[in-house]
Image (cartoon, rainbow, N blue to C red):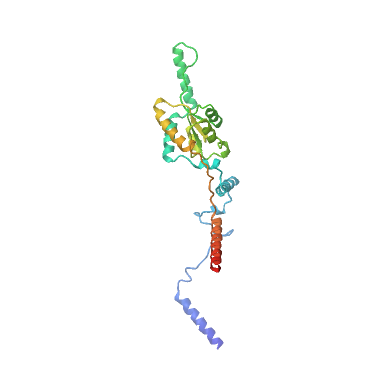
Length: 261
C-alpha cells in the first residue's frame, strides 16, 4: 500500500509539472542587495538612512522644543505680524528709500563737488537723501531720541532676545512700530543678508500720506494693543493619543461610579 501511494503522488506531481511547459524558460531569480550582490536602483529615496549633520539635527530639535513649550507674552507677541496686504504696502514704501550703494554715494558726492567747484565755493554742500536706517544700535538710538517715525522689526530674529525689548521701548517713546515676517526680506532692503529691524526718519513730501496711513495702522495694531496672552504649545502625535486614552479612561470610570451610585 505505501508503495502504490508513492507512485500515485509521483504521477500527480508529474502531471502538474507537465501543465506548465514554460517553467524551464522563465525561472524566478530573486535579487540580493547585500554586499557583493545586485546593484541598488538609482531612483530610491535614501533620506531616512542618512545621518544628518549635527547642525541640522540641532535645528530640528530646537524647532520641536519651541513647539512643545508655552511662550510668555513678550515672546508670543512676535507671532502677531502684518498680513500679506499690509506687508506689501509697507515694503512698497520702504523700497523707495533703499540706502545708496558705495558706487551711488561716490557718484552723488562727485556731482556735488563739481557743482561746488563751478560756484567757486569751498567744501561740499547738500543734504543726504532720505533712506531707510538699519542696524540694531542705530535704530535704538533713533527711537530713544524720537527721531524714528516708523520702525519695522523682523519676527524670526535668532536669538529673539536681541529684539525682545524693542517693542516695549517703542511703546514707551511713542514711536509707531510693526512686526513683519522674514528678516531676509528686511535685509534685502538695505543690501544685507539679514536685518533685525529698520527705521524711517523722514520721507519725501509725496509719501507723507502713505507714511501716516501705515503709522496709524501700526499704532492701532501694535502700540495700543500689546499681546498679553501666553502662546499655546503644539503637542506631538504620541502625546495627543496618550491624553485621549487617559480622558476616555477617566470618562469610563466616572460613568461606572455614576452607575453604582
